Length: 388
Ligand code: ACO
Image 1 (spheres, rainbow, N blue to C red):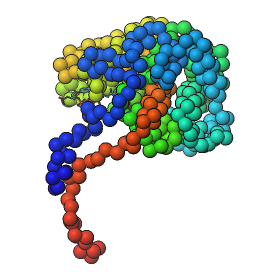
Image 2: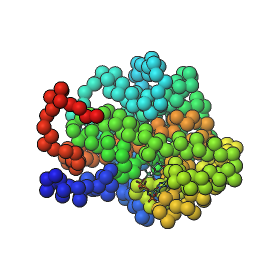
Image 3: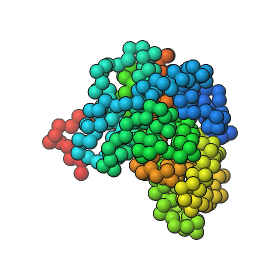
C-alpha cells in the first residue's frame, strides 16, 4: 500500500458521515439542539403559520413572499398542475406493478421526454422555473399513480384549491376535511428540506455533472425510496398495524431490543435528540386519529415510542419524522405504498432549491475511495487460472 493510501485510510469517513461538502443558506439541521431551520426560520413557526406554497417560495428564493409574490407563485404552481395525457397512458401500459416510487421515478423521466421542450434548461432562472413545474407535477403524478394502482381513473386537478388541498382531492376525488388539508400541508412543509440528506445529496451529485434537473429529481426519488431513508414510514405503519394492543407493543419492543433489531421510525444520522418534525406530527397524529377513529393505533405508537426511548435515548435514538407521518397518512385513508411518494411531493422543493444553489458555484462531486485490494498481480493466461 502506498503512503498516500495509508493517509487516506486514516482520514476517510464511511458513508461520508460528518464530511462537509459545501456551504448553504437554505437550511440547517441542529442535531444536538433538535432544531430545523429553513432560510433562517424555525420549522415550528413555519409549520404553525405558513403554507407549503410559502415554504417552497422561501426555499427557492431565499425570502418569505409578500402577498403579490405568493399569489403569483401559487398561480404558477396551479397553472403547471396538469400532466401531458401520454405520461399516464405510458404508466398504465407498464407490465410490472412496481413500487409507486419506481412509477414516480419513471413518471418524472417520462415528463422530460414527453414535453415539446425536451431540452436542458440553459440558465438557472429557467431551471428554477422547470423546478416549479416539477413541484406542481410531482403532486399530480403521485395522486394519479395512487389511483391507477387501485384501478381508478386519475382525478384532474382542481385549480381553485391550494397545493395540499388539491393533492388530497386528486387522491380521493373528494374535498378533504379542513384538518386533513392542514395536516397534509404541515407534513409537506416538514418534509420540504433537510440538510445534506442522502436524496438531496444524490440530486446534487447528478446536477454537479451539469446533467438536467429531471435527472437530478429522478435520482432524488430513487434514493428516497430506500428503507433507511424515506421508505421507513411504510415499515412503521406495517409494524404498528401488526400490534393489536399496547401490551403487544411493549412485548414487541422488548423482543426487538433483546435481538438488537432496528426499529423503524427511530434514530437519525444527525438528530441525537427528538426530531422536531416528529414532535409536530405527533400532535397532529393525535388529532387526526381522533377524527378518523384510529385512536388505538395512536396509543400503540405512543407505547412503542415510550419503550424505545426508555431503552435508547442514552444512545441518542428518538422518533424521527417517519414515525408519525405514516400513522397520519394511514388515518387519512392513504395506501401504504404512497407514503414515500408523499415524502417526495414535499421534498422536491428542497431538491430544486439546493440544486440551483449548488449550481451557482458548481464543482463536480468526486470523492475518492481507499483502495484496499491487491496491486501488481501478474496477468494470468486462461489455462493457468486455477482459483479453487
Ligand atoms: N432501532 C434500534 N437501535 C437503533 C436504531 C433503531 N431504529 N437506530 C439506531 N440505533 C442504534 C444502533 O444500533 C447503534 O447502536 P450501537 O452503538 O450499540 O451499535 C446506535 O443506535 C447508532 O446507530 P447507527 O446505525 O450508527 O446510527 P446512524 O446514524 O448511522 O443511523 C439510521 C441512522 C440509518 C436512520 C438508523 O437510525 C436506522 O436505521 N433507523 C431505522 C430506519 C429509519 O427510521 N429511517 C428513517 C430515517 S429519517 C429519514 O430518512 C427521513
